[in-house]
Image 1 (cartoon, rainbow, N blue to C red):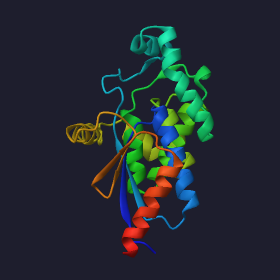
Image 2: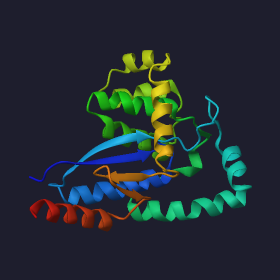
Image 3: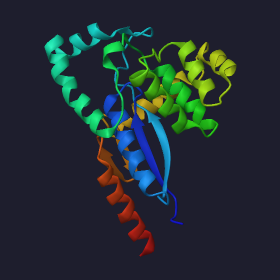
Image 4: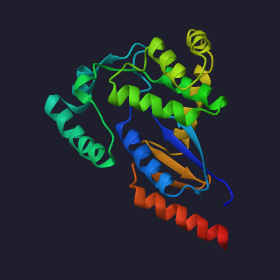
Length: 215
C-alpha cells in the first residue's frame, strides 16, 4: 500500500467544471483502487457577493455573459464536456443561482463526520441533475439526511452564524495563494493542477506517484 498523499480540492457546488472534474477524477480513482490520495475539499465561492437568497438564474447568466447569446456560447463547451464525462446537467430546469456559503458550511460539517466527499457528490447531483436550490436550508437539510447526517442538527446550525467566517477566511486564503478559478487540485501540498483534467491525466499522476514511492 502506497503512503497516503493529500489531494486538496478547491471547488464550488455550483461550478459545472468542478462537477465534471470530479467525475473525471472519480473515474481514475475507480481504475486505480490502490491510489494514494486522501481527499479534502475546500471552499471557493464563484460568486462571493451573491445575495444571500441567490438570484434568478437567467438574469444572473445574462448579466454575467452579456445577454442570452453570450450565456449560450459560454455554456456550450460545458454541455459537451459533461456529456463526455457521463454526468447529467439539467440546465433547463435550473431557476435560481444560489449563494453557496451555506452549502460550503454543510461540506465542512460533513467533513467532521467523515462524509465530506459524499456531501460534495450530493450537492452536485442536487444542483446540476435535480435542479434544486442548494441555497435553501430545507434542501440542505434534506441533502444532509441523504448522507446519514442529522438533518435536525444541520437545520439548527444553518440558522446560526456557525462557521460562516471560517468559510470566508478559507476562501480568502486560497485566493491569497494565487488560486483564481476552480476546480484547482493541489497534490501533496506542492503541485497545482487547475481545471477539469481528463481521467488519463489522473491515471498518469497516480502512476508517477506509485513510481516515486517504489523508488
